[in-house]
Length: 140
Image (cartoon, rainbow, N blue to C red; front, side, top):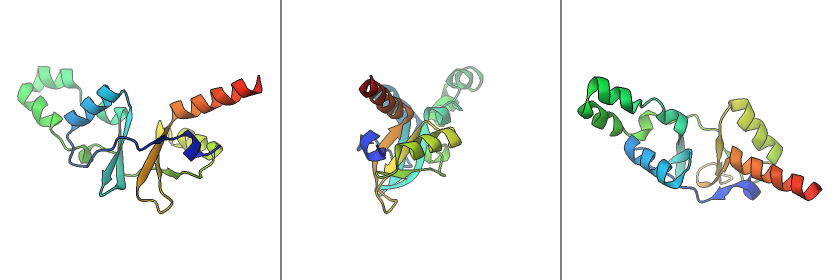
């Protein structure tokens, strides 16, 4: 079993200039926790729900006011994304996917074409757990 078998194909992506507010809305609406950031189809970063935690909306609103909150939420995602993204290709074996998730303490890996540019999928820890469940059920 490899990343191509596990991945969610054609994941939602955003551009670096997408605002934090837009990414928050997208993640909430689609119930996702990780979004690849792409420019011209090439992976340039990843934003996760952990990256968005730095926006303490309640504190901003109470301490600095609505205008400060609006300003912060308008921040381009490129300013908060992780640009040092670990990715895999379709052929990456399941054990390597698991090792990368554990070693780097991350929740998802973008799956890119073999040339390393275009995002073709995403593998999350949820995908890995589903595959494990299926393997365990087959062994029963």
